[in-house]
Length: 231
Image 1 (cartoon, rainbow, N blue to C red):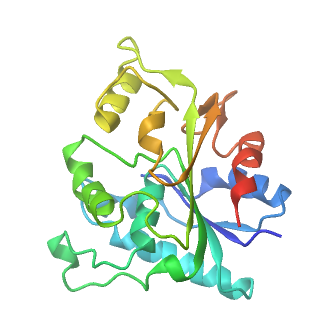
Image 2 (image 1 turned 30 degrees about the vertical axis):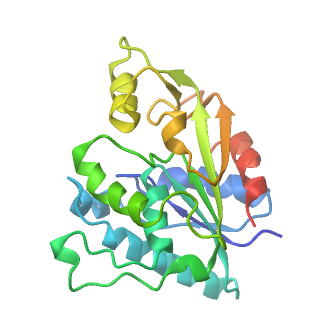
Image 3 (image 1 turned 180 degrees about the vertical axis):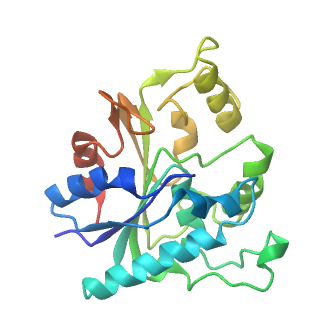
């Protein structure tokens, strides 16, 4: 039986869309709980500001899940920005790049109680100046699959090729990876969703977010693909 799993939603997302992912994981024998975020909980992070409140909400859910399941280890799944925020949560270095955080501390380093980190369509790189402040901290402090005692699984969807005629996808890929003519999930290109040293997976026809008549990372058949790597 897999360890209980905590899901961290993507940027500006609330917990509701991840009920589908929780149900799909349950069918694979994996107990899962989503960090109960609301859209407004993300507002203090807008413009590249601190994500410490999100990290603390993640820790509160992780601690509750370990108590509920009488265990001292969990798996962690981060969708979109949730993936790189989870990398901050794993870490031991002070997260003090924002003046508002100088007198605040992160929860205890989570590497002691996270067995596997799965990132789903996470932009591990960015060319966008607001996002880079946080992401540069992550990538310079914890480059690649940083901790040997944590299994890193990085999942990228390959569904949409960036073209100038598709303004949103083209510009999203360009802001993330520097080129708009790549393949990805419609928001994050494959190259940006992978990390050096991780088990990097590409899933065909998988899009970034839930859409009618389309697969995304939380669709039952897709969850079946990546959940096999959970500890």
